[in-house]
Image 1: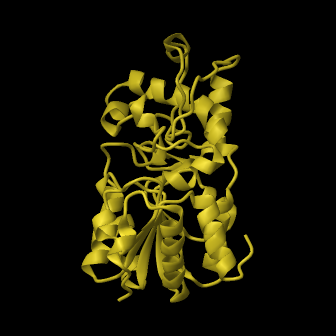
Image 2: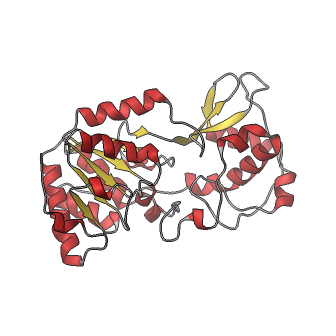
Image 3: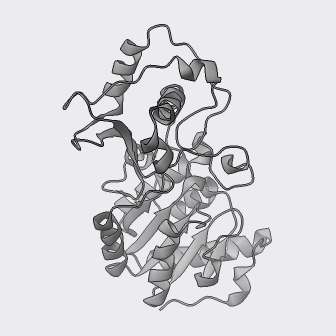
Length: 294
């Protein structure tokens, strides 16, 4: 097991301490077969806000819950109207230096696999193959009646056809791909049913708040950690159990856990090293240390 001095676990380290801690993360990656767990902090440099950072949307916005979505058509109308506008921003986002560094480190053999809590598909766009999308992806849609899946692009075209002239402008994009809209615009938005069964309710293929991650997907994450030598967390506060459980699992198995995140996390007590630096520059430096082009 890799061990680092406890002195480098300060919540807000100085620049020199953060640099020293980043060197320790490089030592960890040098041993290869390190699993990564990425969160919303990795995508903020691509213009996608997070939920719990210093400017996180939970300070202003209550996200759609699974219970609200399935309970009423009005709830679904609210979600899809707002998401119809916001998704165009999400789908237009580009991978940043952090995503590219993760892909490059993976290609070079330093990373055994990636678990992402993000639903923006930016890991794939950056070149990371087979990232486990813990919370699903906004690029897909699933029918709650027949389980048929389709692309979000296909749904976007169908919603445009059902809502000709819909020109509502959102005031703020949220991490789950929706925006703040005037209630009048929401009330006039028309929904469409599943194209496969013609009556089913369509839902983005993501795990809403209040919904459980499918057990096979969770087990796939545990299996990745089992065959890895350690776990590196990138840009996650680990506030919710869906991500924290993997940190606890790795630590219980005596696998070293390192965290790069701006601000404290719920998993800090399990980390042998924590770095408080912006992810883009930090990951770019790590890749460069191994001679990997980003």
